[in-house]
Amino acid sequence: MVGQEYDSIEDLENSLSGTIPANDSNKTRTLTINWEWKYETGEEMEIAANDKIDTKEAQEITTYTFDVIVSGTQVEPQ
Image (cartoon, rainbow, N blue to C red; front, side, top):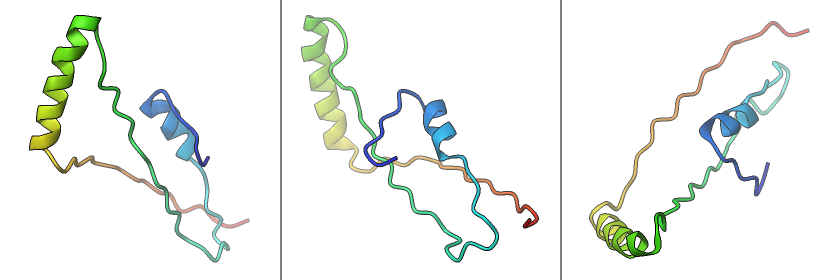
């Protein structure tokens, strides 16, 4: 999964699904998720205007927060 890119949140979600066996000594998983922000969008004239907006917003907002919901279900070991 290292270096893998996804085109949607749904694709990422499918990749993150899985099971941690009950007898696994490591009961935790650490996932690092990087976010790519496609900022140069629109026609050529729009790109320049959008770049100014993106730069202004980046200077005003230094921290972004995302809600991540993790759910788990205990299954009986086999």
